[in-house]
Image (cartoon, rainbow, N blue to C red; front, side, top):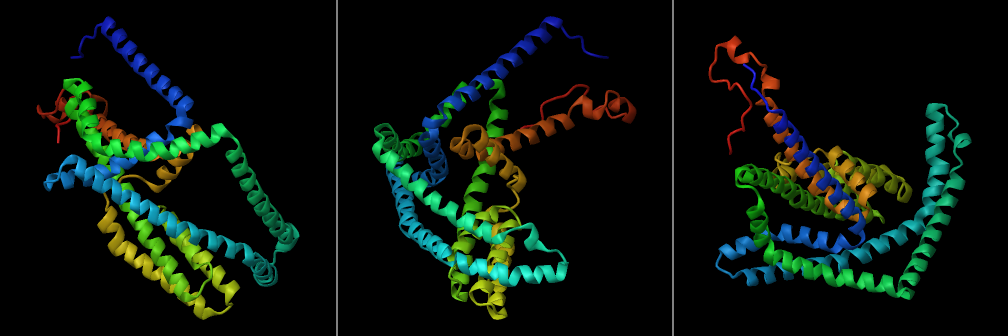
Length: 384
């Protein structure tokens, strides 16, 4: 027997949903307006969220909250300073090496690679693409980019407002991070106190799942990218490639996309070995570096640090980052992964509710099977 629904209740339910939709749209519009000034707050909140488990662990070991926060904040600051002091000069030197080696790559492409491809494919590639002009255009745009960067820095130094805004962001970031680390548990408790009591178990479960998904992805995948980038870079440097460190960093950063990171690094490494040495032993060395790296990643790094609990498909990650950057700029790229993790958890919860609903099971499923345990109406899944 179908339940009798009151039309007034249906109208009230529709109006409540409409109000929530209006609130969501207003929030997105406000976020779009305030995106230029929200970046340090979002970055600080993300750093505070990432460091809160370590603060809680130190607090459980007997230290006070303030002492634990100071220790974690100091460690994060020292790590950031170390990365800036070591990585930035290294990348700068590698880019300068690449710019100086562009004529060699141009000669190898025009004199070796293109004739080899044309001889085996029978296609006159040179007639379709003027690679000499492309290389000249690349060098010209690189020089223009350097000039634009110098002009932009000069404008920032001359513009009082831009300089003040940049300095304010630099000052705000550590301040927001420190207070996010110190007050994260209080903030979570305050938000939980505002949730209606009937929905608190469900919201707590979904929030915990979202935090586990996002935390596992960011912490585990970041460590995998860092370790593989260092392994690839040092391995290619040991082989003798001048651009080995830069290629290793690129391959490590792209590791979060399966096959794309090692494939791109392997191609770039082989091309660099051919241009610089032109022999097979160095190409074999590149193959060994990436082969060993893939074995270590597949059988130790990814299973141990990431596991199969993430649930975020690489294509979904790329789409989320690109969509967030298009809609909200750099701020959108920062909040893309948290939003993707929450959306993934909500979609799984919606699927769970759907598989427990009458629409999925059918109206007469209990009568047809003779099973009185099947509910007549949808009910909330049991809390974990």
